[in-house]
Image 1 (cartoon, rainbow, N blue to C red):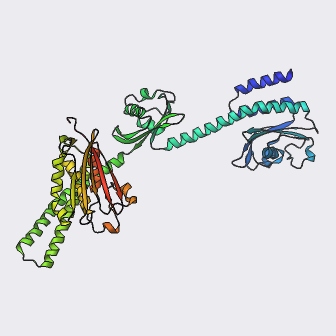
Image 2 (image 1 turned 90 degrees about the vertical axis):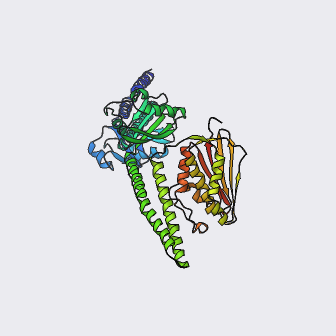
Image 3 (image 1 turned 30 degrees about the vertical axis):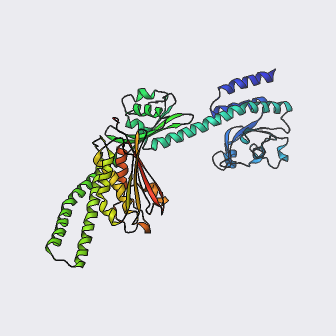
Length: 504
């Protein structure tokens, strides 16, 4: 009856114990009470660092403990009978400490020792050691009671360890998030705030001393663009990214679902990069514009020299090279100006246009180059094509660039096909050639700025490396898409799609 009453009281007290200090103190106290031990201690096992930490002790001198410890109350993992219990996972009863070679003297008077480990999975998490000043002083009943105590204390101890580890990880996470310059906001699946770091509080003018955990996200950020971003993210199953401007700052944001938690929203301040990008665009536009006048003057003087002087064949060759260089420089300036316009934001003059006359006009504009290389350019379309919703001048630039590339990168007597057909609510346009093709490693960066194919087959082919970048941006501005398929040495096909005009 007494044992049952003790166990009932132990269970009641354990249910109220959450902190590790309280659990080990309670465990030590009941171990002494149940056995009338003269001394005892509890070691927490730190396998990762190969040591045991003294959690609590009773009946030992501080000087003796300090003499045995490697550091402040930290002991080797193989120390004494406790180390034996850690390595084997078994309990040990030492009837006479003087006869056990592993016994470590913590108390000069102790003659018997009872050591019981507590496991966490397959590993020992803690060890309880009790000692008495008489030989073989722990009765069978006392050993059974301590075993029952340890069995009941194990769950509480492991829960306390988990709670402590969780709190440590939470503090680590809090420290890391506080040091991050990006604004980080985490919610649960019901849009209740779970976490908000310092940068987020400063960005959205929140009190840093307030705990926002559990508060409604929509209410806390009601007057910010975050509500719209969050709702759009929910419609996309939690995935959303883009750019927003708030309080004269520009942010790139990413929203993603977090398993078992909810959603995270991270905002990266790109204001400085935007300002630098704008300065770069302004500089490029200014320099490019200012270069057009002297370049025009150079072109005029070159033409004048050819008109007023009777030049030799060698001089005519120099004039031809000068004209080619002027043309290349003019193209580069136009491309740079187009890039600057694209980066600063395009304004399209969208109308329903018929693309068949546009195709014929562009092909005709390259007729001289086509005949020089004895190439065949074939237009393959139905007799009637639906109209597309596009800016005629910009679309002409796109098609002209693709056809020009096909001509440049296709050897003499090659074949080029311009293919167009309606596909659902879109018009598909493909420019196919049997030219030199594109190496597979170059395709991922083909539409980046200043990208050129660098190999022996493309050697000597002129270009600025901006054409395909401009093409991609113009197609995307029309709410279209562009892709490329190529086999090196056999040819390439560039395919773009554009939305059909509603009237058709």
